[in-house]
Amino acid sequence: MATISFEFFPPKTESATQSFFETAALLKAYDPAFMTVTYGAGGATKDGTFETVTRLQAETGIPAAAHLTFINTDIAHLKDYTDMLWDAGIKRLIALRGDMPEDLQWPLDPDGNYFQFTSDFVEALKSWHDFDISVGAYPEVHPDAPTLAADLKALQLKCEAGADRAITQFFFENETFFRFRDEVEKLGIQTPLVPGLLPVHDLARLQSFAARCQASVPQSLIEAFDGVEPESDAAFALAEDLLAAQVEGLVSGGVEHIHFYTLNKANLLGKSCMAAKNAA
Ligand code: FAD
Image 1 (cartoon, protein in one colour):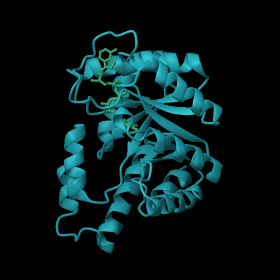
Image 2 (cartoon, rainbow, N blue to C red):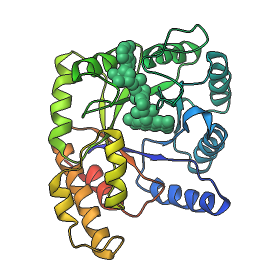
Image 3 (cartoon, rainbow, N blue to C red):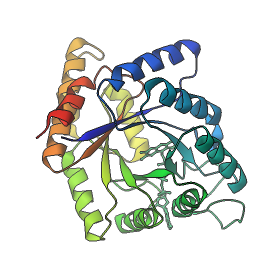
Image 4 (cartoon, rainbow, N blue to C red):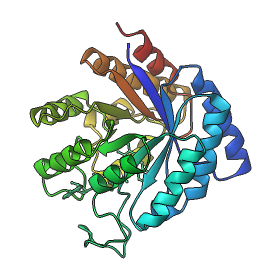
């Protein structure tokens, strides 16, 4: 059996908020270990994240984690915001750099008012409060990293700084995850590596998003959807089966926890959640 978690983004309208909490209630039935709420780069959805994550935890009774990015936000603000989360009962964070805004260059220059690397951020968060902290990991290498070795080193530093788990960028071939896990293990990193899985709601959209994230969409996936009407029952059934097969393969390869990028929708996840729960 594998445990599961669900990731959401903060809803922007009243009707989206209503359907968000209906979706969360449906997914609660699969007994997730935690649910997470993303954070807009540059603080754009900071308030949305806070309101959503606190209400999500209160309504479902499931531990909720707030994503938090440090880029473009000074340390004093991050400290105040995390104090507010902690005081509101949010004890879990997904700690991230965030995507680079156009006016900044990577790597960041040292600046006493800002964090430079996610490892520094994780270390500070742990010193402020005893948060459970997840960080990101990139089986196909982060787009800003010059090499896989450099990216693995960055992951190692985040783990040494106190991360409790690393959740991966989405991928569609389990071999990609297993190869990456081997590299992580070779470095002696003991922090659990959690695969992050993205259901295929809309292949065309997914392809353009994946290109920006440097995540590959295999030809086999494109061929599987060839001739299948988008958003039809057939597309739905195919996406549901592909995701469940991916989960089964990961669990039989020793994976103990799976994180789903829900896109605030429950409809493709049932079979996969059951596959994770019922695995021997
Ligand atoms: P980092 O670990 O900071 O790495 C970024 C780059 O810096 C890499 O190239 C890495 O190799 C390099 N690097 C890191 N440390 C060092 C170092 N010490 N020395 C040299 N190089 C270093 N974005 C949002 O805006 N909001 C969200 O809610 C959000 N949620 C996410 C959830 C998950 C599970 C994942 C995987 C990503 C999420 N993202 C989110 C995207 C994320 O913010 C971007 O991918 C961002 O560009 C990298 O953030 P990071 O903390 O994962 O990467």
